Amino acid sequence: MSLYLVTGGLGFIGSHLVDSLLAAGHRVRVVDDLSTGRRDRVAGPIDLLIGSVTDAPLINAAVADIDGCFHLAAVASVARSNEEWRETSAVNLGGTVTVFEAVARRQGGPVPVVYMSSAAVYGDIEALPLSESGPTRPLTAYGADKLACELHAHVAGTVHRVPTFGLRPFNVYGPRQDPQSPYSGVISIFADRARRGLDIAIHGDGHQNRDFVYVADAIRFLSSAMQAAGVSAPVANICTGRTSRIRELAEIILRLTGSPSTIHHTSPRTGDIPRSQGSPALALQLLGIRAETALEDGLLRLLQDAGENI
Ligand code: NAD
Ligand code: UD1
Image 1 (tube, protein in one colour):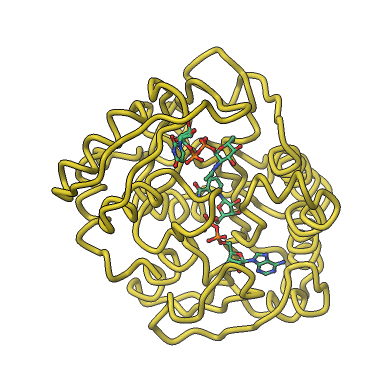
Image 2 (cartoon, protein in one colour):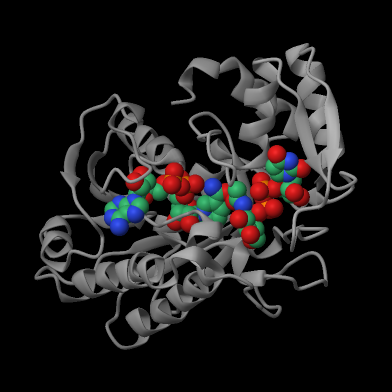
């Protein structure tokens, strides 16, 4: 039994990670500022510290007796990162450096840190599938900060001997993802609207595609990465390597829900990337796993867990 710190542990992905760590018999400490996190997402016993990952004294105390850290806290809204550039960078990059530094300086010596980067580091690279050894060209403050986190992970490893593992999730979906914001993931929006019988709006012709990852798969990557963290600061995609078109996604959701909702098309979203597909090869090599849940199976699980979408 280990004690893990999970930053952002009351968020969409973080709360599933906390559940999984508790189910495996571990003890869990969470640091979350409740900005998008919700206390009622986690039912099990946790040591909850309400505060920010940018608060160095809080993070220094939070890492004092841990065996490892999962760092997920971030302003995950890409749109907000462009509107509130400095403030979100202070969290997305500054918070990560705060965590790395606290772990580097802790009395018992460094422990592994698994942190969330993002597929947003690739930006508009057109050569598919997107691979970790290929170029990065982030288009947003969010993507730029996530790439900078990866650079700081190298510093953490080479200068301070902190073992890390960075993960670049593609489009993660599942229960507890908030459908309310216009910047919510497309699956949470479509599923919510289909359930309520409201029309579904596809931006553009719907031929654009994405590599959708079911949240339970993302949790397996996080857990495996804790064992694979190293001072060479490895980074790997969380992706399936398969893509689905947005039009096809909408049709599957309507079929699975039996919803009377209709689909209509609006003008394309500015800057919308036409295609996104990750390469699962390096993750398979480093972690021995791949994201396997087929889209339709993941959607069924999401729809069955309707009551869990809090
Ligand atoms: P989320 O918004 O549901 O979770 C983020 C959590 O961090 C929330 O609980 C929030 O309250 C907390 N938080 C935010 N700022 C904080 C701060 N300053 N101090 C402490 N806590 C803070 O988002 P999510 O989708 O669960 O994302 C989790 C991580 O995965 C993030 O790092 C995100 O960038 C990354 N990610 C997510 C996706 C995706 O598809 N959901 C894709 C790529 C990367
Ligand atoms: C994700 C980020 C986005 C970021 C981009 C680049 C999320 C929720 N969004 O966008 O902020 O800029 O990665 O890394 O993580 N769609 C519709 N109708 C809707 C909602 C969406 O047709 O109601 C379409 C979008 O136009 C897009 C696709 O669905 O083509 C997926 O959208 P979304 O879930 O926002 O993810 P990304 O576009 O991949």
